[in-house]
Amino acid sequence: MTHILSETNLDYSDILIKPKMGNNCNSRKDVNLIREYTFKRGQVRKGLGIFNANMATVGNFETAKHLLKAGMFATLHKFYTAEEIVNFMKECQDEKIDYSNLFITIGIRHWPEEFSKLKEIEDSGVWLKENICIDAPNFYIPEAYRILKQIRENYLDAVIMCGNIASSDICHKLLEYADILKVGIGSGAVCTTRKMTGCGVPMVSLILECADIAHSVNGMICADGGIVEVGDICKAFALNADFVMAGGLFAGTDEAEGEVITKCFKTGEYSVDWDFNPECSKMEPGKPMYSYKNYKLYYGMSSTLANNKFAGGMSNYKASEGREVLIPYTGNLDKILQDIKGGVASACTYIGAANVKSMSKCATIIKVNHTINKVFERYEHD
Ligand code: 5GP
Image (tube, rainbow, N blue to C red; front, top):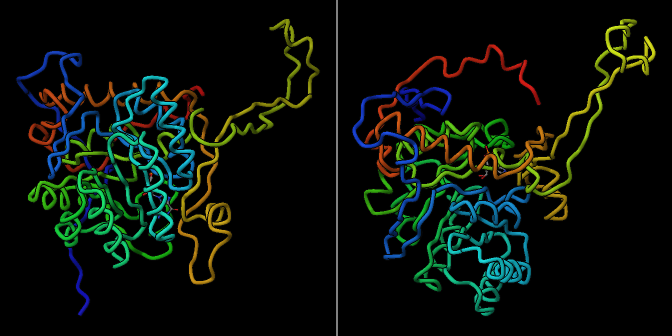
C-alpha cells in the first residue's frame, strides 16, 4: 500500500544557520577555505568544494577555467569532443592553470562512444588526474550502474562522481564504485521534473539523509541544484555536503555560454520639466523614454531547446523536463566567486568554524518561516 512519510522535508529557504559563540577564528582571514579531500581509494584533491553544473551553458571552458583559477572544482559538459578537451587542457598547461580539479563529464546515452572519448583523452597524455563525472538525470536506471562499474574497472585511481539521485537507499550500492554522489532531483532553477512527474526531494532533508549514509562508507556527496544565493552554499556545507554544484548562479555571467541579450522597455514619457536639467532640452515632451536591460539565456539540459540542439529533437517517448529562461546578466564571474569565498568565510566566523569541513560540526540549524527581509529589494540598482 502506498503510504505517506509525514515528516516535512525542508529546503534551503526553510532554514537558517544559527550564529553562536565559537572559539576558533577572529576574522574571515583566519578561515581556511581549502579542504583536503581524501577519497576512498586514497586519491587526494584540494580546493573549495564548489562545482559549476555540467550543463551546456555553464559547463563551458571559460567558466571552468575561472573556477579552477579560484581554487575551486569544475566540470565540463558532455558535448565537447575529445579533441576540444585535450586542447583545453593544453591551454591550461600553457597558462599555468592547475586543472587537477577538472572533471570530464560523460553521458550514458551514447555508449560505447562516450567510453572511446575517455580513451582518446587519456591517449593524449595531458589528462593528469582522472576525474570523471558520469551524468544521468536519473541514476536509478540499471544502465547507469553498469556504466559506473565499467568506468571504475577501467579507471581504478580516478575520482568518480555520479548522479543524480534523491534517496539514501542507493548510496551504498553506488559508492562501491563511485567516490562522490551527486544528489538532487527536481531542485534546479530550470528544472520542471517536479511539475512534469511529481518527483523530487527538497535539498536540506536530502543532504542530511545522503551525507549521513555516504560518510558511513567514506563516500562523499555533492549537493546539486537549487542554489539561489551564496547563503545556500553555506547552508549546504553546514548540513555536511562535501561539494556544492550550481548552474543558475553562474549562468548570467560573461563567462557562461551565449551572448548578452539586450531588451528595451518603454518606461514612460518625457515631461515638460526641462528647465530642471539642461540635458532635457534635447528631449521633446511626450517622447517615449526607454530603459535597457541585459540578459543571458539559461536552459535546462532536458529542455526542448537542449534536445533540439544536442539530440536532434525531442524523442516521441519523452516530454521536456527543463525550461528556457532569460536571466539577468550579472557581469564578471570572478565577482561571484569572490562573493562565495567571502560568504563561506563569514559563515564560518558566525559559528566558530576554522575551516569548511568543520562547519557541519559547529553549525546549529534552525527551521524558520521567513529567511530574508526583502522589503527594499525592488529598489535595487542594476
Ligand atoms: P541550479 O543551480 O540552476 O538551480 O541547478 C543546476 C542543476 O539542475 C544541474 O546541475 C542539474 O542537476 C539540474 N538540471 C539541469 N538541467 C535540467 C533539466 O533540464 N531538467 C532537470 N530536471 N534538471 C536539470
